[in-house]
Image (cartoon, rainbow, N blue to C red; front, side, top):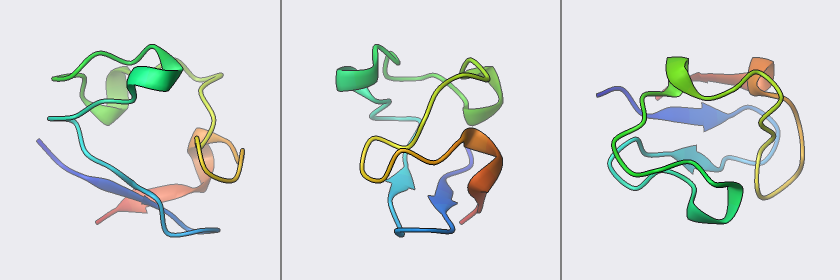
Length: 52
């Protein structure tokens, strides 16, 4: 699965890890994350991420 990087702070979303603090289970593809999810580091929207 593709990793995605936040354009603002550089946080990398790894689908194998998910975002436990944001209730995103490991194995969740970036495309399957809810649209209202935000970067856990800086709070920008999902739209501000690009493929790593």
